[in-house]
Length: 234
Image 1 (tube, rainbow, N blue to C red):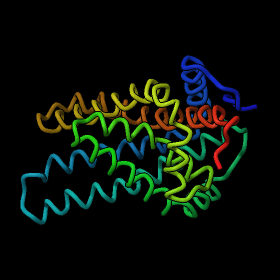
Image 2 (image 1 turned 180 degrees about the horizontal axis):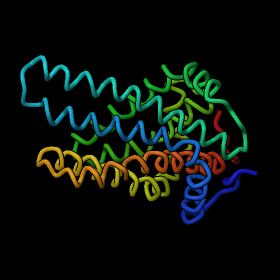
Image 3 (image 1 turned 180 degrees about the vertical axis):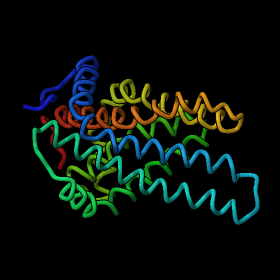
Image 4 (image 1 turned 120 degrees about the horizontal axis):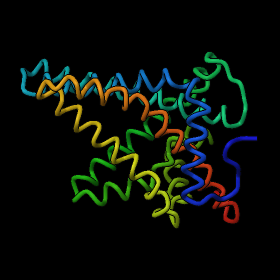
């Protein structure tokens, strides 16, 4: 039996389930968190180093983070897929995991990029719309990856399962979003001011954070789906 089931959970149970699955899965997904954390750190470093330089370096500072973002979406999809398999006590080889992600990657990456575009656009519009949209469509990645939804379908279904449970979803994901935001801010500060000890502290925390964030997304995703069993997604 998996750590989380199809029954509805309260906030405390969701956090407990997330931490238990994180503990169970960490030995098999930690390296993905290491890679994702390292790539995020490199992206921030490139932005700090080249943002005030010449045009060619500005192109590099834009193009490199874009490439890093693509790889990060791939790695986080692997975290989601492997954590879901571990919860279901299914053993899937790395080769088969990569094959599964490869089949769905284009849809996943387009969905995630649209989500972050909406989030960024909403942040420009006084922050709150960005947070609202991000929470409302926060399930597009697992819907596209695990439920084989199309791009538009994933946004429609994320709206369906989150709507009516927005505040619950916000209460769970907001602390993680807060940590993610301040990790980026502190890393930028550390690079700008050559505070290498901060990088040594925050870097490992970022590595530990990525698997936890996506394990929590997975647990919330399954809880939201269970809450729609009386009104199933069509």
